Image (cartoon, rainbow, N blue to C red):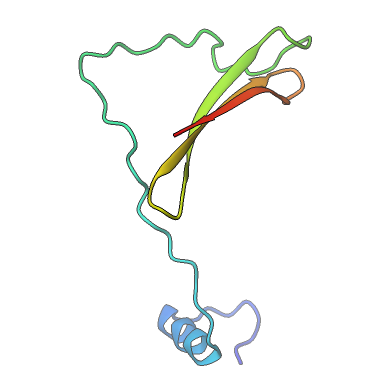
Length: 95
């Protein structure tokens, strides 16, 4: 073995992992889901990046993300979050 805290070459790590039958997680290239339209205007930042609220139901933020399926298709998840509690106020899924 190697003393703890000692540096080792990545080739040695690969060799030891291969001998132990361990496979590392391979990061995939990020999928580009939108193509910027040059004519589009930038949306104003109405919250000034301040995602805190002093009372419930006074400030909400939204997000849209995609969920890849094994078939190669995607589902799209839209959420609305209350900035005060951090709880999901509403959500919808569509294909």
